[in-house]
Image (cartoon, rainbow, N blue to C red; front, side):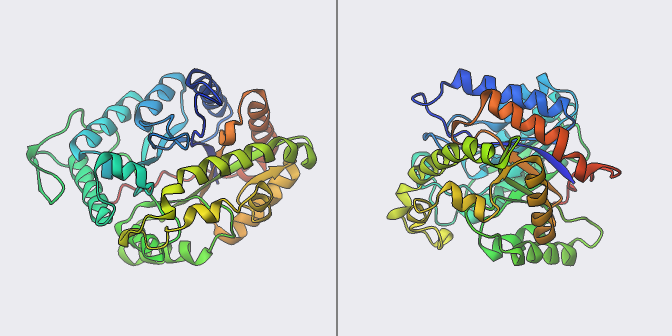
Amino acid sequence: MRFGVSFLPDSSPETKSPVDYYREVFDLCRLADESGLDYVKMTEHYLHAYGGYCPSPLTFLAAVAAQTRQIRLITGCTLPVFHHPVKLASYIAMVDAISNGRLEVGFARAYLPHEFQTFQVPMDGSRQRFEATIDAVHRLLTEEQVTEDTPYFSFKDATVLPRPTQSPRPPFWVAAVQTPESFERIGRFGHGLLITPTGREFDTSLTARYREAFAAHHPDGTPRVMASMPLVVAETDQKARELADPHLNEYLKVWASALDTWDETVSTDYAQYTGLGSVVRTMTAKDLRATGTAFVGSPEHVADQIGHFQDRVGADGILWQVDFGGFGGTDAMRSMELFAEQVRPQFTAGTTPAEPAGATA
């Protein structure tokens, strides 16, 4: 089983300066690398405390590559509907080279109305734009003299440079949240699956649907499921809750604020999202802990939580969100150290790390 760290900044200049934020997360990245963890993941968002400190995950991961030796790097996720595929493929290949072939690329559809409005990209029809962009990026990374003519972009005889360091290209992952068809489509396309269970018991039929579709369309490949969830490990359960709960509540507050525009937004491509903010506003840190979507406790308790999650979901890896609600500094470093020293060995002793997700189109 693989483990890593996952970042989704939810700070603002009023709560933490960007200089302090990046200093803390780079410290955590170096610790993760030195501790033998498998991944660093960073998410793309704009214009809001929810994610706004990282408009460019690939830029962030290039900086991480320069400070680490072996840990793999994954965008979690980049938002292709806001990028031209030639630029995105070129940036991917560049970071793949800078990291000496350690990059993996996670894509997500984007779901915040204020981002679509600012970039003047319509939400309706965004699924088709999303899939067309990923397909074009795949072609640009694996072919030369690529020509595309779509309703969203067109270009002729494009050969991006540099060429990918990994062959045929860095592995692709795609995020899904709650729509069964999304899980099935990711399996059909042969990508790895990224999930972020938050505030409710995860519906395991969704990952089953992904695996079934993957097996049906890529019988020679291997489906991969990676989960991202908050983590705080402390010497006792009580201390862990005291550390985690204020930050988990702050994370939920910032996330709910980013979802305010969903109170009045309606989109055919996001049929289940209208009113999502009102749902998140009812959640508390206790809810996240009770549903097993935040792992908080002593090393023994966290190990039990991982075992329970694995019994239900069977994920190939878990990437720990360690920057939620402004959590950081010495408390976050100590939490990571306890995980690496006392929890992780229970799940890796005598095992061989799984290969990265395949590069299936």
